[in-house]
Image 1 (cartoon, rainbow, N blue to C red):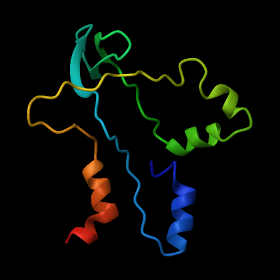
Image 2 (image 1 turned 60 degrees about the vertical axis):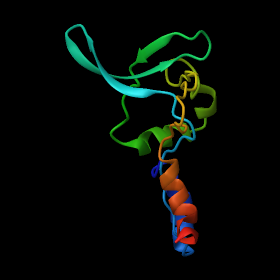
Image 3 (image 1 turned 60 degrees about the horizontal axis):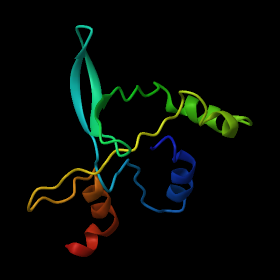
Image 4 (image 1 turned 90 degrees about the vertical axis):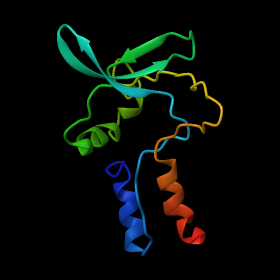
Length: 123
């Protein structure tokens, strides 16, 4: 996230604004797990597909060693035409979890984002 926002963060920091970059999700619909495939451990994300209700475990793929290289390619002249083509980008739609009595919605770092945004007003 920091690489993706580098230009904006630099401009805001130069003007004295405090910034932070993090990936968040209001609603967590998957969980991480390690599965066995052909005798070796594979990291996967598990969830229920929204379209047909099937429970699946998928390899989320890896992150590049240098995120800037991916961003540079995405900003290129033909990036708009190729970014969503083929296997480069796929979106899986997962169903929300079934909640038990008294449970809140599972999220990813939403509490950290709220602390950054309004934490000083709560103390």
